[in-house]
Length: 388
Image (cartoon, rainbow, N blue to C red; front, top):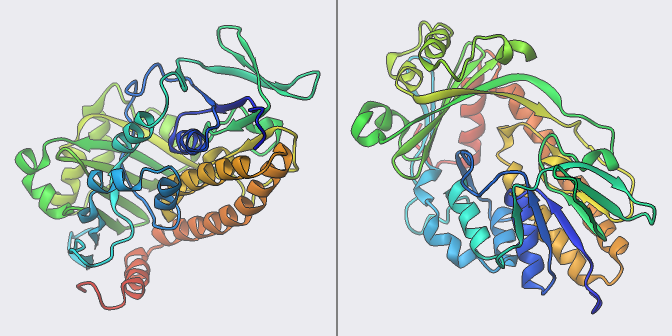
């Protein structure tokens, strides 16, 4: 990188955008992150993430944060249970023990965000700065227009702003497409005391109960919480039909329970005992293999570049790796276009492979015999290291 620092604008303060800003900082390159949320705690940050050794953890290594990450992570969150609708366990991979070499320890999204934010210079993230539009200015430089009317011109503009990216239209006319699957997510608090039967059923990691082309997925989070995802194949308008009303959680619970009438009561308790609102989340994805022609000074990372369903567990890991590798490319090349081209050349095939796997897994989870398909797949992956 030359001694004249480029103006780097990052839209979005998710794991990918913050990793990019941090790795740039490690290399002495300033950047500014524009985030529409009013603060880091303005909204629920979601569930837990298992950070893969070759992607999320590799990004943290480049960020100089891997050793700080380890005591914050929960290796025991690697426990996995597959259940039928009768709550019988069809597959169990127990919590990793010391020395097992677990390479995907869990960390809550909130904790990861705090780790990344605390590593950045004060003022790097501009909270409450909503991007209204983006364009290429008269000199060909990308320009942001913020909701308050302020304009920002950059040498490099990075869209790290998720599924409905404001930056992506500068590069691509692709829009996310509904996958045919919708989630409704909820939360159970203080589970070991208030919901001990549910806590025992879920264990210390993740539980997937599958039958009838539906699923109840539960994920142990830190702080004694379990996050629940109710998964159904449904038309896109299903979550907007009035069936799911976050303002009426009791009525919503009743309607959701009616979708699982003959499921074991211990599984139905994941819905019946949930705390607070139940939030609909229709699952969208960009076309597999999404890519674009080089536009000077502009690129994307994470969901803005390669939104996929969560069934490969790759989204946040890839976003963080994107951020780290983009920063390393910018640090390694004096010419910005050479750097952006090097980043995209490596990112496109990696994202396509993960999106293909994600699409395949989505199909597997909603087959009539999903439990058998996934049990066979996980048994092959663990090769004798789990109970059956």
